[in-house]
Every structure is written in structure tokens, then in C-alpha cells.
Image (cartoon, rainbow, N blue to C red; front, side):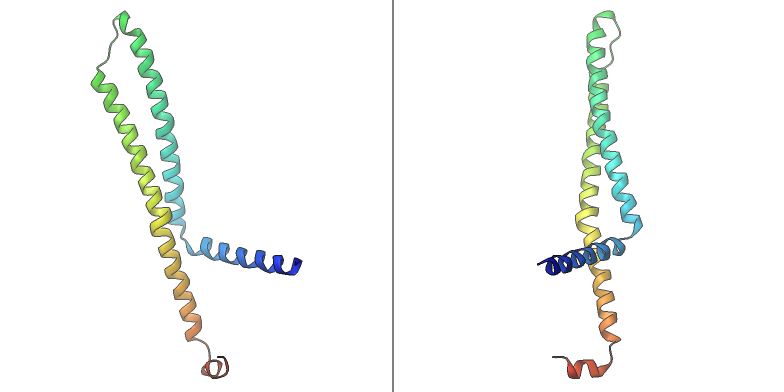
Length: 124
């Protein structure tokens, strides 16, 4: 059994290394940037709600900002958060795997085409 698990680990490592090397750095940077932007918007909405609540409590003292302004900023932060999440999903689960599979199959086909013809006569 240890031999089988060792083979399985090597096989999974080979698949993981192929997928990570096949994806380009451009997509990796975009994925990281989308994650950072989503976290900034998430924290920003929480801080904005805190600021909004503090301004609401100070409203009795005469410093009032427009409700439309607070809602506009909150809506923009939420919209950017949603769009960054959609972009992250599109890159992570749409573009990245398709690009990786295209490169993997191109590499596979080029290796098959370079084999000598005698290989195909002897191998079923």
C-alpha cells in the first residue's frame, strides 16, 4: 500500500504542477487583485456603516449629511464588491481552466506528433 500512495501523491503533484505552470502570471495577479479589492470593499462598507451611524448620532448637534450621499457611497462600495466577485469567478473558473486545458492539450498533441511512426505500429 505505501507504494500505491506514493504513486498517487506523485500523480497528484504532477497534475498540480502542470496546472500551476500552465496558468500565466497575468491571471494569478488578476485573481490576487480581485481578492484584495473585494476585501477592501468589504471592510470599506463596514467602516462606512460605522461612520454613517456616528453621523446619525451627531445629527442632533447640527452636522447632517444627506441621506442620498450615504446611500450612494454604500451602493458604490457594494457594487464594486459584487463586480470584483464576478470577475474573480470568471477568471478563476472560466478563463483560467480553459486556458490551462488548451495549453495542456497543445503540449500533449505536440508530444504525440513528435513520436516516431514505429511507436504506433508496436503499441496497441
